[in-house]
Image 1 (cartoon, rainbow, N blue to C red):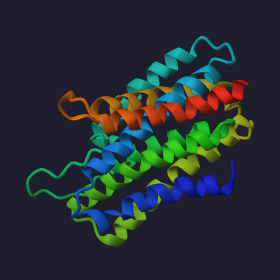
Image 2 (cartoon, rainbow, N blue to C red):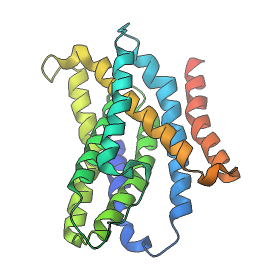
Image 3 (cartoon, rainbow, N blue to C red):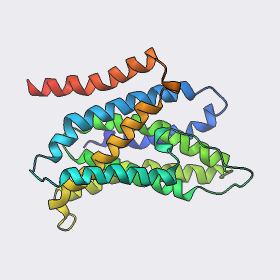
Image 4 (cartoon, one colour):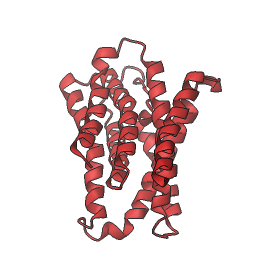
Length: 240
């Protein structure tokens, strides 16, 4: 994985959150939904075309169990994150303001796990998908912190912390796949199964929730088709 890819992951997340200071009074909802739709379709295509086949490459029949575990694990994470990884923005209830540590922790763990597949051989496609996905997630996180009256300096620090999670996940996964981290290499595909389950939950939830009242939306349809088409074309070109 090249340095520019790591920097792209970091800066998309970091500046996605910092942009709250520029656009918090603007009409950003529609643009965020289109970004979410594209990234959701993109991640779904990458998961189906690359991650799932690669996870089963080692003929480990237990991978499916870990995919289900990852799917359920993401459901549990969302009980603490309030769906921020989908770009949801929630305001605090009443006049009670507190720092959302549970949201920050679950979102950082989510980003760390998302960075793990990057240790395999299709980094460029997946890097763009994850980077795009983290823009609205970071913006939503910043919105929650702003609503909870977190200081500007603290917000910048916590956004920085969130932004380094995906690169950290890649570095850990790379060490794991190379056998540097203990004897965990034999369980790499099962760990990837958990990540696949998370990706499936995130991508499908984004696609189902990004349309209001289930009405036909031509812009969303075109964005979703673009999100699926790009990795599909690249995948087919690799077969030739």
